[in-house]
Length: 241
Image (cartoon, rainbow, N blue to C red; front, side):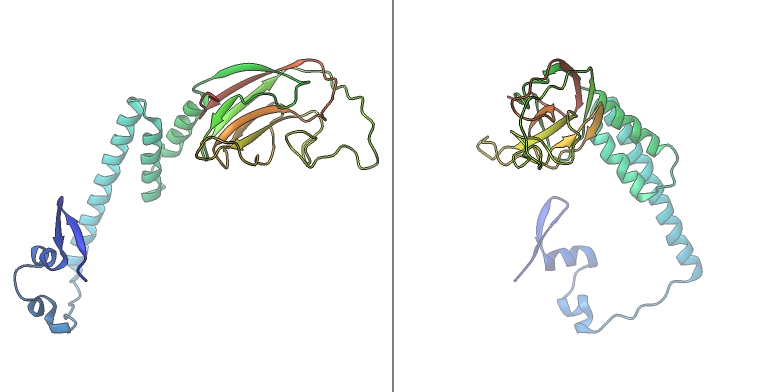
């Protein structure tokens, strides 16, 4: 079975490609009738010349990649710039300023697209406030206070916490601000919600899956809470609809 390769924009068979790379001749001439070719170690001078060429090629690659990252940044394509700078970092982590530039770009991304609103502490999760994407970080900042008022009868086990959408949430302080992501299938239908995330007065969140973002306080259903919490979202966000 012949394998095909793309070479210079043209698809060629393996034999044709070998001829292009090595030169004309029969397959036995090309490959020495199965015999291993004798390999002569390079001289010290030849080895130094190869190493010098490698160093120059690496330096040129880093210069070109860094310049391209700068051009993408100036064009406002920050994700492209970030990806290229990470490539520079992988090739040579000792280059000064790359980490600082990555931090600056990340902060610019997380501060962009700000959206402000308030939530009613008595209404549980309420409606979705944004759409988020898996692996794309966003930021939540919160301020304000409210009265936590609960007039419920409970037993020794406390409030039930089996359903994060309708009940108290385990592992998050009572009354704390929290977020949850509800994934959507290919037809836009909601799936099983992810694990609630404590926000407190602020947090940067990298979603484990794409979906709708809900924000609320950790309080039991039927609470009599009074007051609103002011929220600001920014970063990788889209409208919920």
